Image (tube, rainbow, N blue to C red):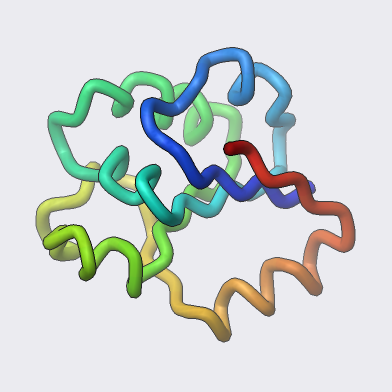
Length: 97
């Protein structure tokens, strides 16, 4: 399943529903959660520990002033084409706001 997280703070109850092999895309306000040292990093790390992909949508991250070298380890950057690829990989998606 593809989980699109679009608000901050990231809610633990949302992340509890993410299963092994799922992917997560952070956009809108949630893009800042990918910044190294952000209070949501432990929650995102718990998702990475479940062998899930965590992606930040580049356009939102850049709009927030987040550079790739400032992101926490394990978070990948993607663009809209990559988001389309993730929707093909996961025909079921849920947006968390």
